[in-house]
Length: 599
Image 1 (tube, one colour):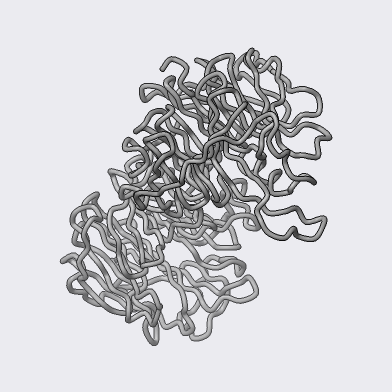
Image 2: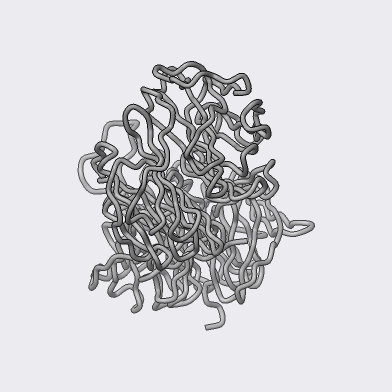
């Protein structure tokens, strides 16, 4: 139909917080909007919304990362072990590759197809419980190949690699030429008691560096750095932060000094002279003379008191990937400056969908649209914008006091003085409906209607407190509304609790039909036709294909719960997920969701 609803928007929890606050007195009983028929709320199917093999990618999700010629592979902690996830586009989108029951602590991918994972049981345990797993299909299937006291591995080819094992009296270096099935001791590091952590990195089969660390404490940690140029047969002390108990090798005159502050977290080497060290709570340091001198680097990007580097992968001195505290991924292409890749700074604040495509508002206040697979920047909007909606072929951003048409110059459509905008939906460039909070009105949020694209508004009384809404045409709206729950009133000034219903009107609010009753907090709704639509709570997405007579309940996973949904048709829809990233798309009405790259 020509005036089908082209999108809705709700300002996060702003409208819900206003409603929950109670606003003093109950909503008016009914006039002039009167209650009409009540459809029994019938859930005829219960399913779980499927992320279609996409992992639950949230901040603080990454435990280990490997870079291959074809993309990235990451270990993502999960309640049942570890998810192995792959990204073909340097962290923009991720696909679930495998589920492992153990906790993966390290990854190594010498080729795009052959990789290794070092894992331990979820309950932890001594180093001898570590298992080396191997994949030959890019991470989809894994086979155990070795078990032992190995704390780190690095492979220079599909079959040739090194392993570092913590032992007594000193850590030992092992080598394999058959993909980890058998190992040979190729060298023992000089005796150093009290080693509790270690990092190993090789630039080629002959040149390797090993960084050993003692028990951390009070923000500091004793460290020693050894270097080999003959494949591990002999080692030279390159640098140390101070004496470690049991360090038998005399400190040579050419050895450098490492900082005591900070804990060992990353090591990257490029040859016998060039290396980088990352220290949690201690910044990053570089040497270009084999460890004799050290210079702090990347201080503008990773100030030690703000972000900690937890893992460092640098194939070359200019190209690198770093994991930081809370699981963020940073990348560099010049070896000097870094930018965050995941999660991005520009997350999704709001979505709206319709025949014209998808409209997106970012947390930075930029409005973008997507049609036929292409993104177009519409412009920026003022700070404080919380929503976006289609109005005919144009896009409107929602701010607390005005509707804004982005562009150069942008067009402002202010609300009446003292009003606060909470949600809005337009069925055409002129006809719209909004949830507003009029100044000084003790009854709380009210419904407002415009017939000239937001230039003028009139208030409409309703038998409920309106929240999320969807306009299908002039006078034809779906609205989520709260009414005081039955039972004894709580003591003042605490407001009475609300129960939530879903209402529909076809006559401009003169009468209302209740189509979903006694719900938990309804956080949003979207209707694409009188028959097809959705509403959602924090944990469940409800779908109807018969105008609200029956519903299918889709339980939302952690990645989708409390997100914002927007549907363009009965089958195609979008959601930003609970953390504003990534963008997910469905083509079957919400049953399965796939991550989609954003610009």
